[in-house]
Image 1 (cartoon, rainbow, N blue to C red):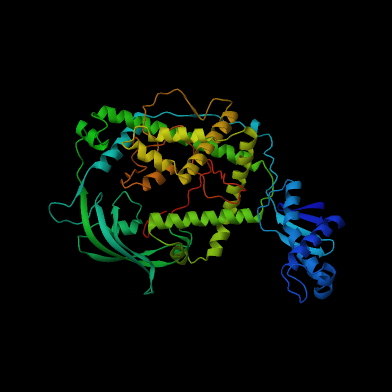
Image 2 (cartoon, rainbow, N blue to C red):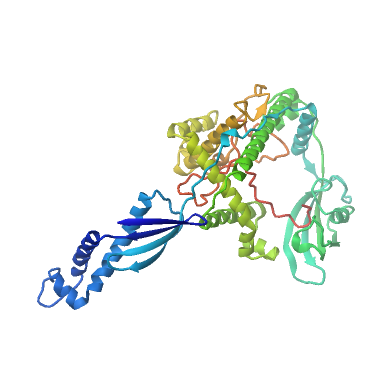
Length: 517
């Protein structure tokens, strides 16, 4: 076999493969043995028709075609291995010579990536400190979160600070068709949720059972409205179903026990926990910001062509992320979302493509750095992480069994890999100082953070998972050692190692009708 390689733009390669006469003759012999066992000819036993008679009766072309078919894939695989290529797409084949076989294959391959002098990139650690005011604010949020809401003793109109439950319909002025799916039993806290000011004002003064229509108009450049609402007017139908007012509990040691689930007996201890949770969150934020800065700097300094098929797969992954986000957080299908946005799936994919290319570029660069730095995760590392996660749990044996499943072990492997890689990149860029300072500031021990693998494991048990809001840090806040977002679905990489470290890749939330962005 002879192979000539031509490299094209966008990480495409043309392999011109030809067989020598001896190699092709052996393939013809194999083709004859295959074909002769498939024919029946009077006067000859099955498989015993002489070759010269077979060629005379069926034509030599039959053997040539069979030989070519038998040679194509093995020769292609051999050429790929010989030239050290990693195909990432389906090849196209052009046979330009049947005997001896000569053909060209065009295929997209994994790009050659040179991250340059990434070891010279430098960033400064972030100073991390928590003030008493921040602790007070966190305690205030926790206070409100755990204080009960009750209906007023005497019926009264809605006022600022109330929690209201209402149904909402939206129609474009002049149309009988709903502009968006109606909201049923939607809950808003007046003055805290980002309702459009006109809706907020319309609800104030309504009583339970009242119905009202509020007309809202949006300018062509109104950034508070969705793009498909600008320059239009809408009628918001409001049906107020419940009014509640909050009764704040006394901020004392009893409250500390309630808010901490019995873990803390005093208000002072609860404040210490909040301070340390805030500290861990700030450290994690510093770590993520520095990681994002490094990824941006290194990625922008690296120039290589990404195969279109890999970007397509990354777009597929982001579409699925959006689909799951809409379903889980908004109870909405992607198809409904696209209809409301007056957008086709192809238009959505076109919008996502630049960001998908950026994310994929950064992932590929990081993957190359991981290879050069020898970052890897062993089965023993995963076992140790599982033991860390189950330590202190009420049912460690059951949870250990859940974590040991191949799917969750794979998630843990990705998370550990990303954590190790981010540690290494930050250590290089900060010359060993780390992502934040002071590095030795004390922090109370906390329960393991609920990362992606823990969430998946929790879903496998019958125990309900406790809801944690970002407004009220608790002992389940992310620990300082944990990496940024878990790896997304494989985006066209040759193996299952997909890297998404510190890229700020949250899918933008679809706004609730009547709320400001």
